[in-house]
Length: 506
Image (tube, rainbow, N blue to C red; front, side, top):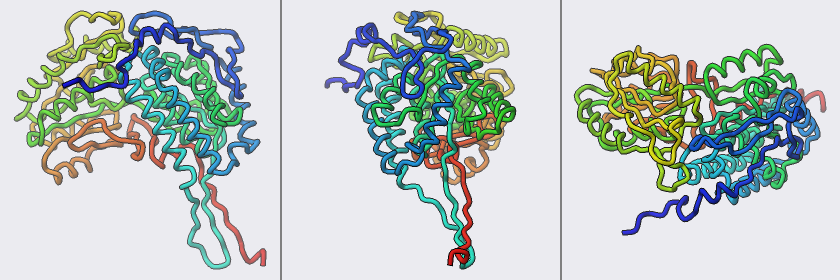
């Protein structure tokens, strides 16, 4: 039987990469331009260490230009006051153009971030397109409200765009995360200034020309690449930015809240870090499925996922059997050249981040955890500086550094629990509250656990699944808002109450 065809098969992606000429300039007021200062920064292929391109390093002056353009566009009403059907049609064209350019977007994601081309092509780009189409379709299906007031009055509750929305997004899913921010903002009628991570700016920069080609008026969508403490800070402090939506680390999220308070008290929505617990009880209905989900839920995207199930809590009766299967599976996960279609695990995003992850691995060993996998040299096709083999630790106590802090790498900590109550206590003993999972054949037990897990998302007998229809976000240090679903409109709109005295017009 022939192997199933994968979308990444059939192309020489190395040849495609050599022929690629990525856009490197900012996109402001409908046109690409260099930074006012002329400064640039290098974006690097983490798999090889080679420089892909020099990208415009936008600063405060460029941010001022982008925000001024967005303010003018919003005030003109060309987009903000356009008929819902018109905005819908433009965003659907935008999605079609991205889909038609899927190979290029996938290649940019892989080169910039080090993830396998198979994932960029079959997961990242399709997810971004689905997100944009979903919010486009939602535009003419949102209704305002009429309040139940006394006769002679009419009270309306209207959902209105806030104005200029700044979106600051991370490097791990550059295109997908950008789209979860800009799609609802544009759908609601706002103007947007997108600031991609300096580690993965190229797909965002390619969006600009496609937005214009789709019919978005100049100034409605802007992209300002740059270093976080410069361009990102300028956006967060800008008095004409009405809302700031962010995905990234908790530390930066706290800074953005401070900047909002120092400026105009802009609306801030945060989706931050996680240390998600994955609880497998003794009555798990399918141990093999739970093993595979636990491994992929921790190691996919090289572990660089905010809701990765990095704390695996095993009830002791199944611990040994589970660990035996998990160890064997993890050892089969070998990173490789991200441009080869058969590669399932790629490079860490940068040498600096890889060194940080190695520091956590050393901390785990010093604290007394037992490393079951993760030894060995870097395989062919990857720079040793950015290659980390999937690392499994057993004998972890929840007080250890590797169990407390977000590592954002392929490191999975296994913690023992005697009972479900103890497992839930361990899961909740965290500064984070993004997500959790529980595996049990007893649905009543599962729902009891769900009600006690202090997280924004709970999976039952599965891990790291969901779609655009379901809100995503956390509690505690994991954030303050929800992306995806109709709830995402709350981040980029405000409610206006209108009271009409009908008798005054009679």
